[in-house]
Image (cartoon, rainbow, N blue to C red; front, side, top):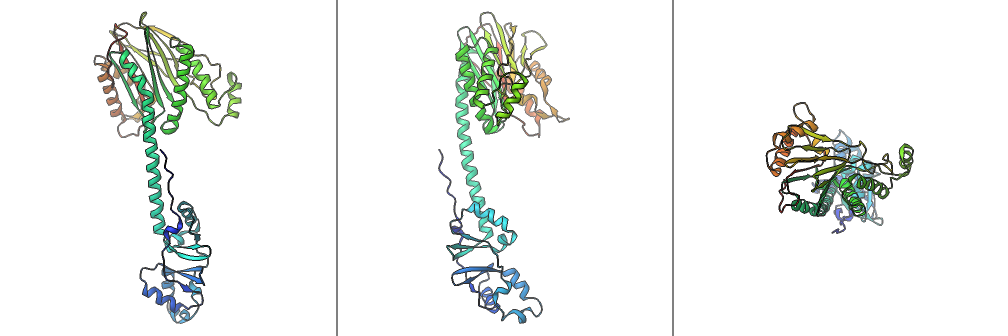
Amino acid sequence: MGNKLFQPTAGALAVNVPVVSFDENNARVLEIFGQHKELVSLPVVEGDRPIGLISRHIFMSQMSKPYHRELYERKSCIAFMDKDPLIVDTGTPIETLGAMAVASGDKTLADGFLIVEGERLRGLGSGLELMRELVALQVEKNRQVMQSIDYASVIQRAMLSASRSAMSQALDDACLVWEPRDVVGGDFYHFEHHPDGWFAAVADCTGHGVPGAFLTLIASSSLKQALELHGPRNPALVMNEVNRSMKRVLGQQGGSGKEAGAQSDLQSESDDGMDACFFWFDAGTRELTCANAKMSLFVLSGEGDEVQTIDGKRTGLGYVDTPDDMQWDNRSVQVAPGAIVFVSTDGIIDQIGGAKNIAFGKQRLRKSMLEHRHLPMAELGRQVMAGHRSYQGGQRRRDDVTFFGARLGGAANLQHGQQA
């Protein structure tokens, strides 16, 4: 994927210009400036070696003062010469040259700089042309970075596609919204269809953008390994294993409790992890079992008018302060046919907006679910997100958004699902 970015050097900016020898007088300088109206500065040389630079603006200002022409016309040109101009070698990279130009002050950007090969003058460099080269270089860098991020988005979506496909096979009426705040994001989901039910996970990793996306790879891999080790039917056990695995991979390990957290803090350069909800639905018993790490699961019964909120421990997975032997708990609830189960990352709940510029909150999410409960889940998901975007208004999107919802009918394994 990566072609190494070609960076031009100072030699590309060297322009051949007239020069004046150090032993010539100011009358000669005046003559050269008169002949070359485009000349901003005039290099002063001793042989082939540049020793200074005469600025047209400064020179003309001085010579136009009363009696200055009569006083200085026959004197050496070094009288108005900048004895300490920026002098750079032809091989100096443009970015390095930019830093040197800024460090040398405004005079370099206004009057230019001298470009040499060895000690021999190669030409005069323009501050304006230097700025143009720096802008072009930054544009190309940005293009290559965005090209890489766009491809990373393809990889991240491909990583999630198997779960989306499994959800379509297992659930007849479901919605799944995954909207990174940036091109890639720190939210991810996982879904597995089994003969006796299905397992789902929704997770929100630290950060968003590229750092968040990197963390999703670690977290997703840890989750898959935990499911292979323990199976999907005990979400709390899976969560315990994912916590240990993430801490190990991120080097955020300790023993247990506060003492271990303090020890890990000394050893680790990072403090990253995730909030998550893991849940298993048993198709035979219609029992929904979930483990929650700072993320709520909502259940809306088929006929009721209240949304049941299932909360868990207020401890995230993988963080420095989360003990290695942290134990999450399973919560189980019987789910009648027609009930709606839904879960959201805090990208929806924490979004600032509305007339008072406050968070969207869980209450508005529950209210939106009740309002649209009779719609097919795909349309319900669209309505929830439309309401969320309307509430956001002109505020900036704060975080990645992931929203999963399913209406649990009488059959556990249907042929086709709908997605938002």
